[in-house]
View 1 (cartoon, one colour):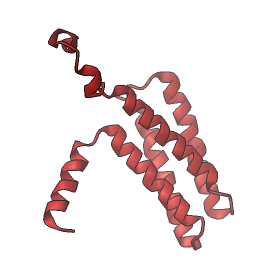
View 2 (cartoon, helix red, strand yellow; view 1 turned 135 degrees about the horizontal axis):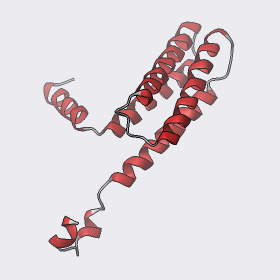
View 3 (cartoon, one colour; view 1 turned 90 degrees about the vertical axis):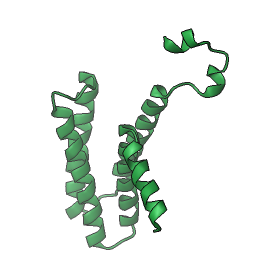
View 4 (cartoon, helix red, strand yellow; view 1 turned 180 degrees about the vertical axis):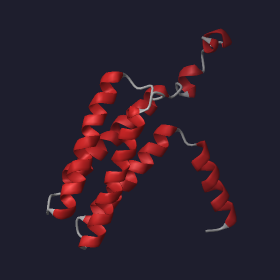
Length: 137
């Protein structure tokens, strides 16, 4: 990778939102799980271990007092996280399909994208007729 591209990539990573990073992490987990569906046992276990660690980190974050998500959402995500961790662990020793994990991760990606879109400022075309007073509100 050339130096300019590496610098751009570094800057892009640091300017990404939390949702962007989370989307990237879930997308990566799904890529590993998808690859593992047609791979050897070692690759499958590595992908499942990665997914299990991802959900473990999410559950830990949800338990922090600094987590500002609504309590009901935290409870639902925690329950989902425990399910994903248990399923990932079982799938390491049993020949369980990986589709349910991929589906849950995909749902998380879609939810994060919706959250990011809801928080985004309106497009410039909608702001064109707005005066400074309206923008300050």
